[in-house]
Image 1 (cartoon, helix red, strand yellow):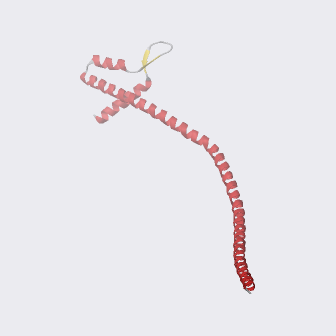
Image 2 (tube, rainbow, N blue to C red; image 1 turned 120 degrees about the horizontal axis):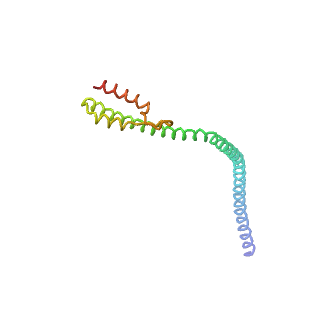
Image 3 (cartoon, rainbow, N blue to C red; image 1 turned 90 degrees about the vertical axis):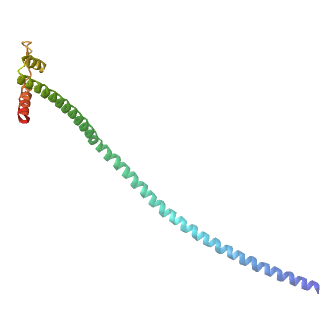
Length: 163
């Protein structure tokens, strides 16, 4: 009888072991099934995203090409702006030189007016000698520059106005 009870206990233990192994296998099967579904969803999402990423890359490439084309078109404009800046700089320098020369001429003219007022002929001759002159090609003689006369007239008028 002990044999029979021992065999029955072994059989019951084996049945209990099989039941627990079956439950564990079913739980593992469900986990694997959920994992498979999740992986399929992830794969679909990756496929959708990859097509969208490809579109974004194409659009970015097109935009880059368009920007490069437009930058090439703007280059001459920027070069023109640079040249205009250089020209304005040169004009400013020329205006500065002219104003400096005019200021010097006015100061010289003021000295001449003072000399006339003082009636000092030596000072008048000195101021007239300092006046700019141009050489006549045919005669080699010295004669005053014509624009200087206009500057002198303007200086005289200015002095009378301020005087």
